[in-house]
Image 1 (cartoon, rainbow, N blue to C red):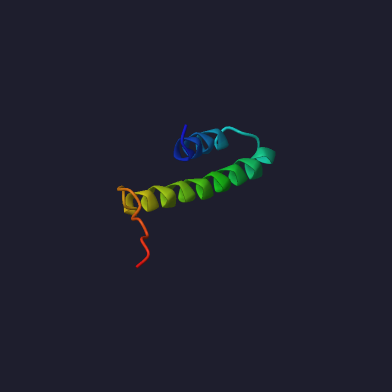
Image 2 (image 1 turned 90 degrees about the vertical axis):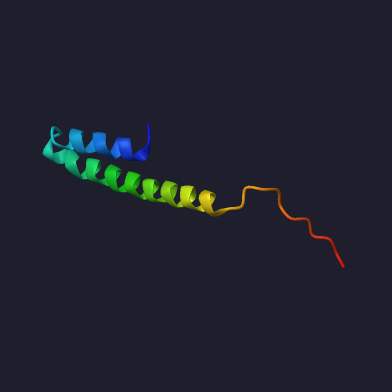
Length: 60
């Protein structure tokens, strides 16, 4: 399950939970949104990194 899927499900659960549970659900959603942002940044960084072998440093 991805963070985005968990967020979607928690938003559904929020509709049916007790009023006292709403702050906990909201907190969990915020945490997962932060995780989703980090996952997105890591994916973007992986796309921009060279895929070949690292260049060798040969002294002159």
